[in-house]
Image (cartoon, rainbow, N blue to C red; front, side, top):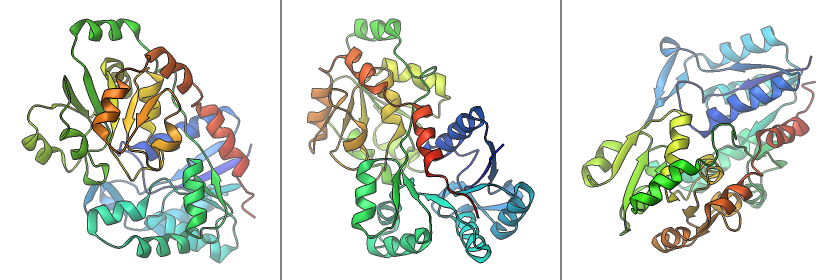
Length: 336
């Protein structure tokens, strides 16, 4: 039975697209007969909070954790999922031992860092190019990000798309009917409530009906105080989130820094059209007839209201975790 070791700084109790992608991919891989193990940061006593992002816990002993994982698992394949302390430790140990590995580019880290700290994009790009330089494949979720990495001089980027759990995220006509009967459009954002998500661009819009926000993060308290008319739902488990998608008239995705935006695909699978800016992520994820992309986000929201939910859900059915995992498997390399 082939074995895979995944090294990741992003792990439970974090709730984000990276963690969900890794967990779901592991489930799919095991169904194909792979043994999947993870090297993760560990418990609170073994970690410290990441500056400006305390939900992320950074390992205090990354080399030990990766070394122990390599020795106990002795994997056939090594995948380094994140560019944090564990990722850098895994990269260095792999280079010292002459091991092959793949990496992943989940997040537009340079843009994220600039939004939070003002550090120039070029500095972060240089650091990430060093991190991924010897990877046998840099797995990234959209064709647009493959092109972006090539343009920035990264070697060997490969497409590894994302999927949706259709058992959870699907249309619920009875919920839709109730919302239509209410006669009030609902504009929804779901995801991390943080500066890099550009949520204020959505909350500031003059829109009819209601605005809802599902999720949590460091900006929540300040935005709640500034926008008291918004319905703040907090963190939701997946099945409840799926019901909220079905209640929403339009899913609004104001981020300009995401590589994919899994929440968009989930919303579309529930029949909810997307309104977003025409940037990396939405340009690849939002298919024709499933949403509206425009530099005027208000216009995108209002035009998305007119899209038929049946068509949105039908076209979003292409997002399959089985297909995404098949891509992941094709890109794996023998560790030695």
